[in-house]
Length: 140
Image 1 (cartoon, rainbow, N blue to C red):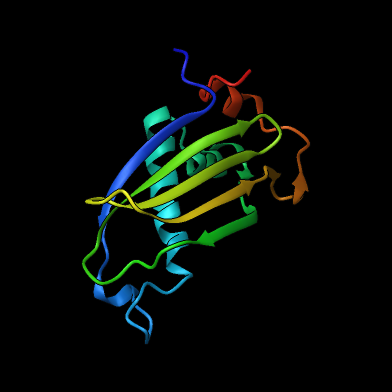
Image 2 (tube, rainbow, N blue to C red):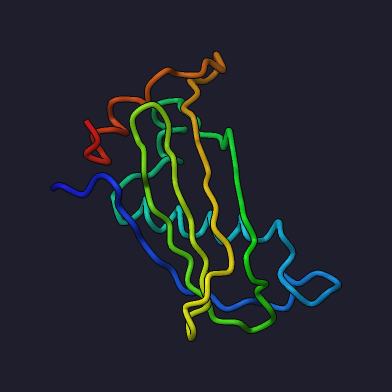
């Protein structure tokens, strides 16, 4: 199975009322929720369960860095697509994100997250992702 790198996956969502701020646009912090939904869907499609590594192998994968650029606001009931693209999976998991309106394709936000591997309970940051993660993602 050759699916690495880059590998992308898209999800479709509609903006719920509770994601809005007082200006009636999506509050900036909620974009990370959309990124997370797309990241989880991408990893599931690749057969990689990071939560399982916490319970089975005592690894955690916290977000170490985030970056977001807001280009056009999302509003209540907007249908949008969030695309997650895995761009690195050797020393850390790096994913790029794009949110665009479903109907017009207009880009609303772009972003990037970086996750590192931590061995528990030592809280030791690993220099490389665990071999089993790289194998699961075919990134050897």
